[in-house]
Image (cartoon, rainbow, N blue to C red; front, side, top):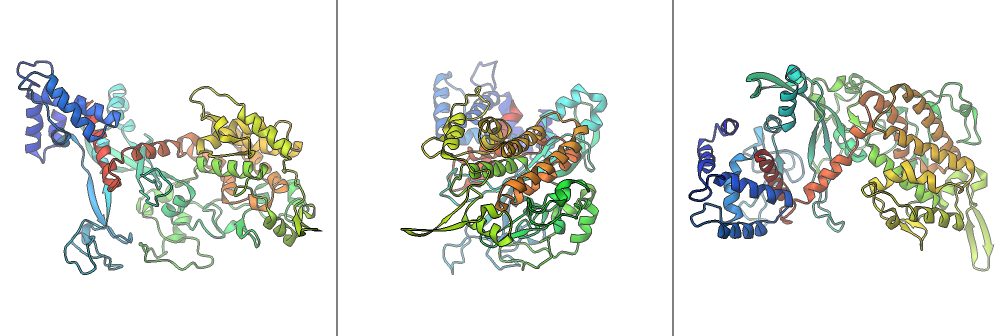
Length: 592
């Protein structure tokens, strides 16, 4: 109760209410349980089981019937929640402009209209209605410092290693944000954006004074956001870099040389030879690549200070109403607020590339092209026309053939083209795979033998496919040189996803993947090399600087997003429903 008293110092009435419940016996003569203990146990069951309020109401009614007369058990969820609420941590609801221009806080706290776009802060029933409705948009903020104070991990660490307390209690954080559909259905366009902080427990700079109850002393708790973890579109939102257009790689920037495919209508990036060693034989080859030799050398990535010098004068305007005009050569659209952190420009990697999404996109592209799956294949008539326009690979140019039904376009088979027999062999191999429970989803369900294609593959399915199953299924299929280069790419992903990586082998791993991607250029169509394939070349650098991939991919965050979606009990107010569920879970953990 001492820790609770500190927590409720500013709310003495609530503390008295909770302390009274802790001293009140559950029923006259009961010595084993207090009212607070019983309610907290039942509330834990509600949170862990995900029970709806009406089901919990029924449970409380029956428990009240089972107990002796005169028991003090709450009769409904409302009264149980009212008793437990003081134990919860703080949550702030901040009104926001519906066009995302401002938050109504600090100097904007008392405004009724957005000073940028003029939109009303509140919903109104009619166009001329003067009566205020609820806020047009809200942001829910769960303050992080009180949650650090209640961190179970830090208390355990302090008890186990008191001599190292001053180091291990410090926090190193990774920030993750992504759009989530709380309704779990593609028919709804609603998007909720949770912003998560994950604790990595390494030493940082920014500080706040705290009290350590175990050692009975004050110490400085330091916290540092050392990276963000997002998919590529969110990477652009958080960093301020333009991830659409020509120079879309935030690491290469203007050193990137895009190729516009006029018929395919996309920019592609088959530009890997510049990453090879200076005298590599692939640099001199013309016919196998784009018809030119490669003399360029890949630029060393810019430091944080160099990047900041480039963007510090960029004008930043927020809101949907403001759309910046795209200027050629301007690669940064805004200055991220993260640059206000004093150490941000000293970080070598500020925003991590997400291997989970890269794996999925690359796996979909390879399998879609091999099986010629409509909508997923990177090989079609438009790409072949672009090859002809660029005067590369004449053996793959489309051929016009006249027949009784008129003129038809024939696409000559490429080295990666599978016959129907090979497709059937490939799909039957995957269809027959059996794995231990919990290893992956049922691969059999992903294979359609009637259409000879793979369907409904999730991110983890693609991870297992490209790491393990794809090289096995390709045995005896395709020409040896194509099969070998696909297998080498699979081996690369398998290596970087390992939990233990030998730092001395990273340079060799980088050289191997660059050469492998160059060989992909020789065999696969130009349309295959979108930005996701290009980003592979930067993954080893991030491993050198930030450690193993499994600490920086989005699998744990995606699982947590799914956990948040399960808390959407009120579909009319999804965000508020999620916040209530999170607070109930915090109370449950605090009382356990």
